[in-house]
Image (cartoon, rainbow, N blue to C red; front, side, top):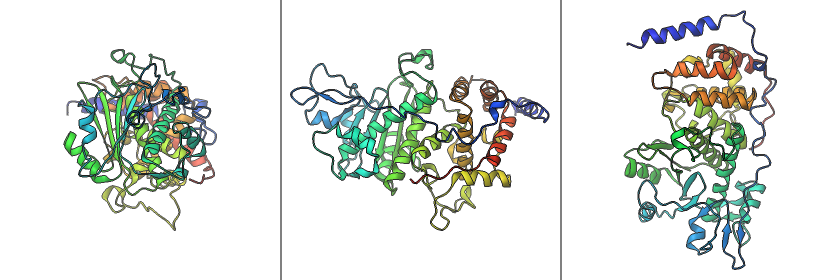
Length: 424
């Protein structure tokens, strides 16, 4: 209760600053929805795979156990990312052997400069990936790709997808891959965490859940994040479940976006849940506008999902129209209430739509402003409340406080005509 006067004072400041009659900055009047489909990594291509005269890989954007086990990596002078020295702070063979007998897992490890990805997936149709992605992937294999990709080919395709998402994140925040200014001093020389983040992807929920129980003592319903405090490494895991291939890729994009947000300026537990979730939905829905983008999966009759109709006449949910309906009915959460939620479980489905819409609006006002917002959010001091750091971030990035931002966001949603829906 000792913080109550301070919280009330902050609330009073919000109310006073939100009084009508004050001239609004012009950048708040966003025309259309430029943030939703802002070109990111549009001209990006992964580094090509280069082989020597003996057919061995001497240069590549990723390292993989498929190449290593098949003896396809040149023993010397190879320019590929360094293979992992350890996984989960344990010996690599020990971790990779987990689940081999009980779940018949055959993990394939992909290493990038900033992440280690461990895939235990089955084959997938090649058409699940774009023609551009298939073209990049073909350069990784000497045999022509078939209609169905092997598990190794799926792993390589997802490794390249991770690199593209990472480039999208860099361009969104106007970052240079070699820049150090966005990294805390104690993490100089690293993109985010001290070591490369680790991501484990499973085909079904049970090996995923048992993995979490075995190594960490617990696991979330669809995905989990763990933080090794002593090594400052981000660990993530999720499963494909019964998702169709396009929805699985949307889930992958969603999870990777979380990973990139957590890596940026190091991991912090106290980000309000709407920020990483809004960004993650933004990334997932850029590539695949599916009805159920990752976190919204679940029982439609649960307490947090009351009134949310998953499927109306077979049509996919239109998030833009859902956002307009929220604002029209006044059912959106106040930004102060939304800003105090730190756990994803506290966000009902409509709050996910709201967070996605708010992030689109923020990005639509310019990447430089969004970068400033993220820098301020990630510079929270120990004695600042969540509302205080968000107030500071909105003021410095957008020139208005949280309440005024919310009012302008609602005005933008109300006046903006939903863009034509893309086929996913």
